[in-house]
Each structure stands twice: as structure tokens, then as C-alpha cells.
Length: 303
Ligand SMILES: Cc1cc2nc3c(=O)[nH]c(=O)nc-3n(C[C@H](O)[C@H](O)[C@H](O)COP(=O)(O)O)c2cc1C
Ligand SMILES: Nc1ncnc2c1ncn2[C@@H]1O[C@H](COP(=O)(O)OP(=O)(O)O)[C@@H](O)[C@H]1O
Image 1 (cartoon, rainbow, N blue to C red):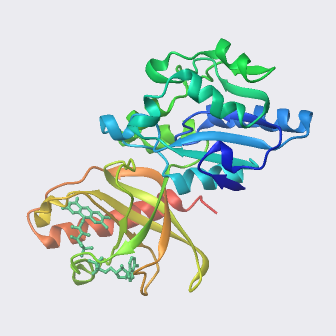
Image 2: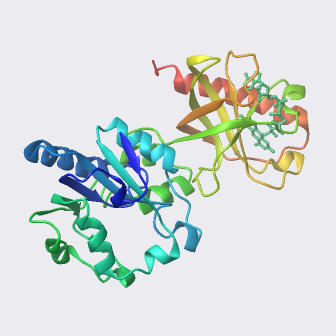
Image 3: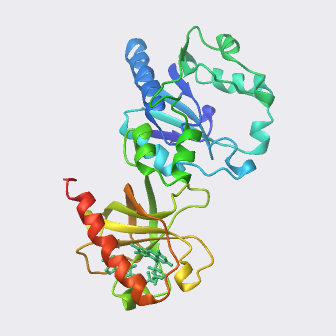
């Protein structure tokens, strides 16, 4: 999949275009992408996703997002999209009048534009579906997909994650919620406890559920090759050792070795418990042993 940061960068050909934040690339987005691909086949032109990074409102309102740009691009590529235009979403971009947005879109020469029925664009959300006909002969608007008694929306998934409900979030995503990041140095306390943990650095703004989770960890690195492990992760403030900032740590079951600098993908399968303040390190250590066994039990049905 090719990626551009402006519509004018791509080759001058006709396209079909889907527009949106696509944060999380959830089941509703996936339905829209399927429609986009069908239109691309029908018109024999490339499928283009026109998206914004970071997703709308994240910077301005402190909302955490579900997928970083690399995560989103990886998913779009996996769903078979030909090209993505990822425009930096700045306050200036948000403040542009709808006519400017339309003239950018026109540069893509869209045979068809595929959007959700509630799609709006331009300053003050003044542009609507009807305006799109100025730059394309066809507008396909999809109704909100529903699941579990509500719309499938990124905000709903963010709320589920905030409540630690990774199973509910996974249902709406059509896959397990995951986070990618590099292993950085921690306080070197884990190995003393007998439970070394890889400290994962995720980009600021990436949404993470709090608590202790059964996880599956994957890597695709030059030194390790493709690998997969079961693991047990903690996302929290480590009250037992008077931690101050949020940490994301994972212990890989049945692994010993050096992970510093590796890029890992962590998939959240099930919440085991909330984080607690223990009276001693021995108590914490005993609980982590129980967590590891609980994770093993949860994950044994995962191939
Ligand atoms: C499965 C698991 C569960 C954890 N649960 C807690 C907890 O309930 N409370 C807490 O204060 N720290 C908890 N921790 C964090 C430990 O305090 C942390 O791993 C230890 O401080 C090592 O930190 P380091 O990797 O920076 O050396 C947990 C860690 C893991 C791996
Ligand atoms: N089973 C394992 N799970 C996670 N990390 C491991 C494991 N075995 C060895 N390690 C290595 O040990 C490091 C964690 O040790 P730890 O004492 O917790 O140090 P730190 O505080 O730097 O994370 C990891 O970053 C990784 O390189």
C-alpha cells in the first residue's frame, strides 16, 4: 500500500475514495472498506483512503486514540487498500472552509466517494453529503453498523477500554485490541522479583486499558524473526513501589533473553484483575505468580 501526506502527491489518475478518521479500523470501518474495494473493482481504479493523523479531536481535547498512524496504515494495508493519504490534522487543517476540503478531494478525481451517513467536513462541520456531488458523480453513504445494542463507534470502544473491558472492545474491533511499542529500560526491579518485565513505550495518546491482562505478544524482528509468546501484562502506576507515571509492562511466559530495543505487538485477551497496592514485594511477587497461571489458563485455547 502506498502512503502520501497530500492528495496532490499521488499520480494523476481516477480513484474511489473513502474519507474518515478510521481510528481503530473497527467493524464499521471494515464494512466501509469492503464497499470501497467493491467500488474500486467496479470502476477499475485504485482504492484510496483519505484519513487524518492524529484522529480528529485527539490533540485538542486530550482524547486517547485506538490506533497510532503506523498501526492504522498496517491495518488498512491488511484489508487490501491500494493507497492512503494521511493528512496531518492540525488546528489549521480543521479550520479550513469546506470549499478547500472539496478542492483537495477533487484532485483525487473520485469516481465514487464512500462515507458514513453522518459524515461532515470543513470548518464547523459545515460540509455534508450533498456537497460531495460537486466533486464526484457518486456518493455511497453507509448506515452506522450496530452491534450489542449500539452503534459501532470509536468513542464507544474507547469507553470500553477505559473500563478495562478488552473483550467488549475486541468484539467491536473484530480482533483483539493491541498496542505496539519498543522495549525500553525500566527500574531493573522485575528481575530481582523473579518476574522480569519488558517495559513497552507506546506513543503519547495511545489508549491503554488499566489493570492486569492475559496477553499474546508477537514480534517480527531482524534478530528474533517472527515469534509469538503468551504473556501477562500490567498497565498501571505500580502503587506497591510508589510509582508515579503510567507504565506498560509485560512478562513473557517461558522466555528468557534480552528484549531491549525490540518492537513488540501486545494483544489484550482478558482482564485478570485491577492493579493493587501490596504491603510487601513478597506479596506482589506471589500475586504475579498467580496472574501468570491465570493467564496460562485463559490462553491455553489460543493456538
Ligand atoms: C503481571 C503483573 C502484575 C502486576 N501487578 C502489580 C500490582 O498489582 N501492583 C503494583 O504495584 N505493581 C504491579 N506490577 C508491577 C511491578 O511492580 C513491576 O513489575 C515491578 O515494579 C518491576 O518494575 P521494572 O520492570 O521497572 O523493574 C505487576 C507486574 C506484572 C508483570
Ligand atoms: N520472560 C521475560 N519477559 C520479559 N522480559 C524478559 C524476560 N526475560 C528476560 N527479559 C529481559 O529482561 C528485561 C526486564 O528485566 P527487568 O528487571 O524487569 O528490567 P527493566 O526494569 O529494565 O524492565 C526485559 O526488558 C527483557 O530484555
